[in-house]
Length: 585
Image 1 (cartoon, rainbow, N blue to C red):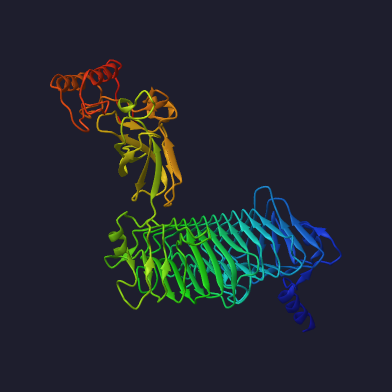
Image 2 (tube, rainbow, N blue to C red):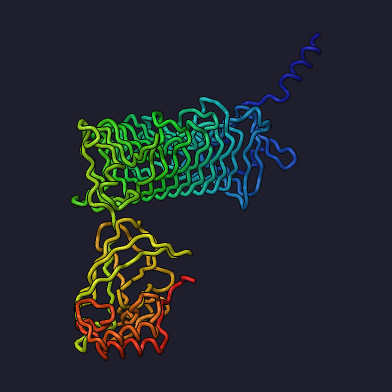
């Protein structure tokens, strides 16, 4: 009987392990060291390292994994790091489950684990990487399929009073959020240049980045691409129980989520800059979400929203409670709140809602582009006091526009003094730099006779690369040099272009040195793109009939008479075959 009991005891406990702690004597080990000293808690099976029970890296000790390896964890097992764990292989270290249907917990970094690093780690079929009271680096990792439902953590990467850096990672198809922190636990990590997509496979009401309070240092979410799939999952959300002294959300692409960015609560300061927030509408119910950005909180919630593209959402920007975000205030001494957003094509139920002010507060939203340069049309895109007298007004004027200081001269008007004979009007077009080179905006205005300058305002065109094309009623249409010019839309005199400084400023060098400045060729009377015999004959006939008057097409010199000088100027250009030079076929 005793032999039978002994056999059963051995049978039941042959594969039973207890937690193993490294010695705490300052050792620096690798995985083979754990195999040698852990008493079976880490074993080698072929080329795979089997983590059979929880491993504790004691304070003062270091474990390094610097070669390509596979680590397979048993059910509910994790590595608890009080010392330092450095994983930095040439290619990758795979951290996965021994049985992918019976998942492990993950990696838990405790206080004293500063200096730890995870690089080129592929973590799958577990629960989470947790950071508690420590600052580590997670870089160039793949975090995927971590779907274990456990109190260990609710997000694939979890912060608890941690200012860690997570950069250049790909994080997808995890159970809940890709990143999470407690509502009242101050963490200020940096989340940089990651691809974050299709998390929240449970389709719970959680975003892919889910944060509460932050610490004194700025929290930074920068350069990430955040793409949704599951209809209840949003992009980025902050719901603090506590404060957010400074959070920066910039240079991200946030697409196809239930909503883009949601900010709740108060005692916060956000800088939301240069993001593309596009088509966050996948749930489809405007009563439950779909905002590009939603502000819902108290008056102590301070946010600056600038240089973002917000389009294709059910709502562009929605404001609730007593939140008071600043989308552009040109009268402010703060140079950060200058608007420059592009907010357009947001709407639901057949109506456009680019901005919905559901508060009693006045809201600044100056110097933005709303998909149109017509102020009356912009008014129809914004829901505020004129739509409901109980709501605050939205100050959306001036509209964002491209202001161009243009220097251009007309050959025929130039006198021996170097001045032009009169101030004359030109029409300027902004054309796309890609075929078919569509006209995207236009403006007309006078060009000063003394300094050859004119100011032109384009209210429809956003910041982009353009060909600048000038038309004058009896000169050759002239395009700016190949490749186009980048023009900034910001309601300030920040753009300048000169055709007069050098012939290379024109496409095909298509200007002529006249006195000291390069000017548009004169003589295209019929505006067919050529100076030719037809133009010469038209001028000759008017000269023969002593035609006079103001701004006569055949009067190239602008002296109010059509005479031999006009004929000669046109003839000289015709014999050198002057024509429009452009990328058009």
